[in-house]
Length: 526
Image 1 (tube, rainbow, N blue to C red):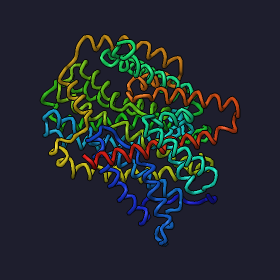
Image 2 (cartoon, rainbow, N blue to C red):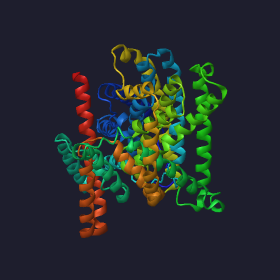
Image 3 (cartoon, rainbow, N blue to C red):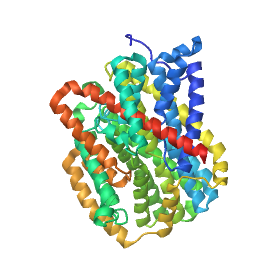
Image 4 (cartoon, helix red, strand yellow):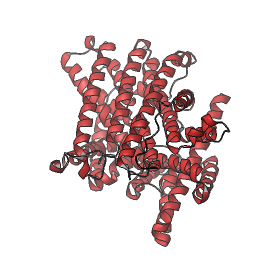
């Protein structure tokens, strides 16, 4: 990178065309796989590989894609389109469809679209703040960055990444969640230890101890308690050292506490406006009293912003985010508050639209942060971050168009995200005193653990995240990875850090490629 170099723009004609093509591809892939398998594949590495391959074609037009920063823009766009279409848009509109309220599909799509744009705006403004530091893990972003750097520099780095990628593919093919294994070498060891413990309890509580933690709402209660404490801790981070927060130049971060506070305020107001629009379009005014409607609007906006913060924290530390489960928690609380069924459908669709785009954009900005030199040139970093944001906006807009044009076809074939049946079943089941009691009981240990760990480790949030994720053997992958990391670190000390990180990125990249390939193949086969 040369001094005063300008970051490439997503609006350059060649880059813009490739972004549109890959965004359409990413959106279609996301819709197909979320409706058939219930998951969303990580397509960022696929986008980077497409740009790398094009850069090696013997045509002058494609040579510009040798730039790692243009490759970053392409991977940002395909990843944004995939998660935007599948998680932020298709899951929300599937809820009224499953409920039999097809008249609410368009209002829900409008609300989800607006929420998605606010979601990604907030991550753009909060990335590299004391709430969401750029130096933190964001493991999938590290994997994509190392893949791009390996393709650019080759040599030992490419060799380590290649070996890690092969191991990742082999491990994934025999049922080992290699992304969990790779994350163990990159993230905060304390946070990942609690994440692994949560995964371990989730996997063995029922078969060994005959305890169904989900039916007892243990994970949900712990997340509620941890989430409340996490919000309080976030408030302390924002308001501490107020006298020195007026300028970001005195901070190690590019976003000052004052800017963070302003962003959260703007976000809440934005979500409140969207909630009002949804209430009008969904006809809630005629179904609720003025007092209940006011309570619903305040709660919906609060739930949306809490959802994205908790999902973002989990994604930052673990590389995994329990978006479905946290949305279910906001729904359960809404049920306990006594909101009517139609408003609950709108509520869970609204909150589901926030979080996934937030987390995914965090991964992409982490990729760019590494490629741009880990923030050494602040001006270049901020410019590059802005260009990635623009690339994401293009991709999200394309995702909206793809979903709007294709949802009739999917619903006509009875294809919708499986998680939507869980949300609708919960709405129909209604509230019980047992649910409230279990949430209250288990919120206490969640709050205590989160308080003990503090805002840097997020122990309560990470324990709850593990308890809410049911991936077989992910617990052993995380815990064995942490053990290897500890042993290697004791023997080779800091000399082992970079090679371990590159190998770990290979594990995650291999896992992403394998899961993308198999899920795409299975979808085509069906």
